[in-house]
Length: 154
Image 1 (cartoon, rainbow, N blue to C red):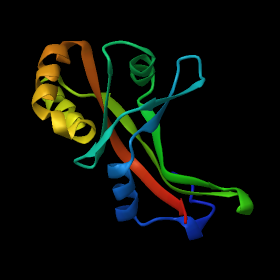
Image 2: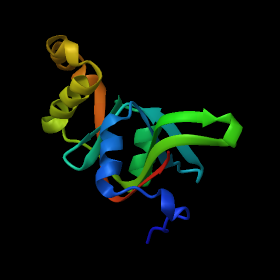
Image 3: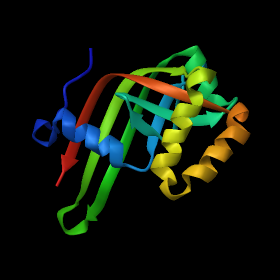
Image 4: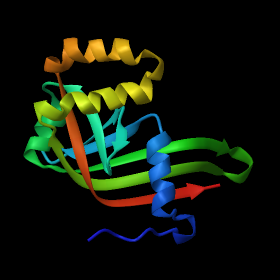
């Protein structure tokens, strides 16, 4: 169903790809709009319990596109460094294909707290209050991973 990586010598093991997902700061969520055009947007995220979770406003393009077509891709690039003398770039990267869905309100705060733990670990209490006060204005999207591949140039 998914194509094999062309540069097989750069392919990472699944455990390596997951470590990259855990450690990168942001990713690009790609959806397809009802007009047939792709839509890629940078987002904060967490890799948790074998899925990707991200938050967004209660309405908007991402949610509209996911309602129209739940198939998405998600990619991250970390540790990138341009090598001008080699006409190349060092990097670690991961791309995921999966299906996205909105997390139920009963579970939403759990994943919002995990986002706080990743991005604001010194402000857990303050973050918990923030979640309590703003939870009704945000959505959490879960990407159930169907395919994952990691690639690196070291």
